[in-house]
Image (cartoon, rainbow, N blue to C red; front, side, top):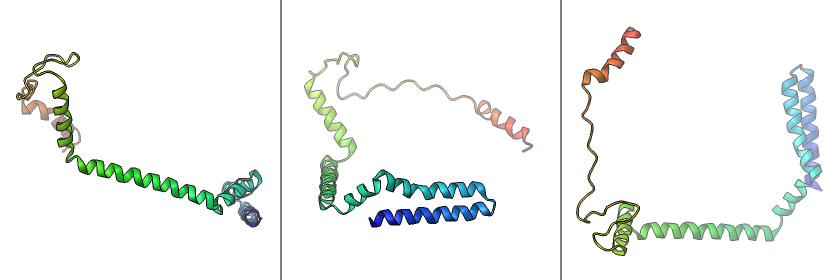
Length: 150
C-alpha cells in the first residue's frame, strides 16, 4: 500500500515538472519528463510493484538467492582448484597430447591428420617468402608523404 502511494506521488510530481517545463516552451524535454513520470504509475497498475515488494520482504526468496550464491561460489572455487592443480596451460596441453599419443600405436597415423611422424621430431615449418626490397615497401609511404607535403 505504501509503495503504491509513493509511486503515484512520484508520477504526479513528475507530471507537474513536465507541465512547468512545457509552460517554458521546452516541449521535447517536457515530453521526456512526462514519459519518465508515467513509468512508476504504470508499474503500480500492472502489479509489478506488488510483486517486487513480495520478493524483497520474503525470507524464502532471500534463501533462494543465498542458495544461488552458494552454488556460484562452489563453481568458482572448483574452477580455481582445477586450474591450479594442472600447472601451466602449456603443461596441461602437453599432458593431454602425451595421453593421446599413448592411445595410438607408435608410428601409426591418425586418419584425419595425415601421415604420422616420429614423436621426437618437430613438425616441418612452411618455407618463408623472401622479403621484398625495402624500396618497394616504402614507396607507398613516400608517395603519401609527398602528397601531404611532408
